[in-house]
Length: 265
Image (cartoon, rainbow, N blue to C red; front, side, top):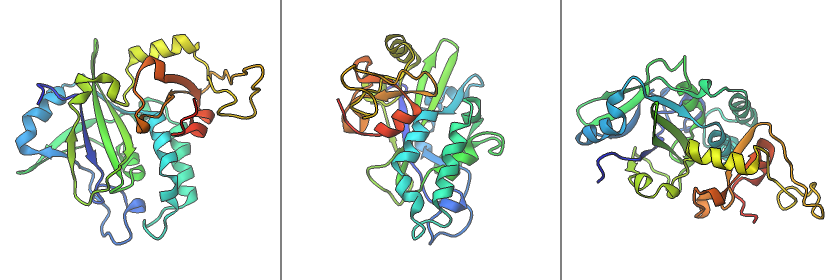
């Protein structure tokens, strides 16, 4: 195992989420702490989190949250499975993310442990995004990935929510050491790579007729919107696409949601 992990991932158990998205068979309102590992791995986790240095920043990625909500949209209609989900519930979550600033998506994170387990939680979930996270992340089918990014100003921790390929009943953590060894194999897009994509695409949506039939094929018309832009994997990450300059493009929010995980090019 490497000296410092590049990422960690943990699935979302039913004990963590808020009542509306708890399974119908569940009881109680959930707990605000999320399991990230065993106490025997505490030192390794402390290294990953830079010994909880006060300069650390922890934040969710807006584009990722919107993609997640789109990918699991069918689940929010499962009133036979969850306690209080609905189309309006899902729509309100999307609106909340769209209208959030990056500061709204930050977390004032702290660590907590007992004799056997290590957890993370917010210092005050009503003042940051943690409570919203617990309203969004569907249990058993969702996985949280935390990616460590060293910058000249300190360490950033980016939180990504994914639909899990392997639903699990019990809390489970896996380590993403490959993030350090093979940076192209993570979904995380570094600030430097975003800058290069932005410069190449001139900060404008590159969607064309292959994605949106309303755009003219003959003239090779592109959207060119520079509002609510997102960084998109041309070949979806879920289908083996790498996080490289040649496999990234800028799309506006409308076309990014339209594309989802389709492979068009």
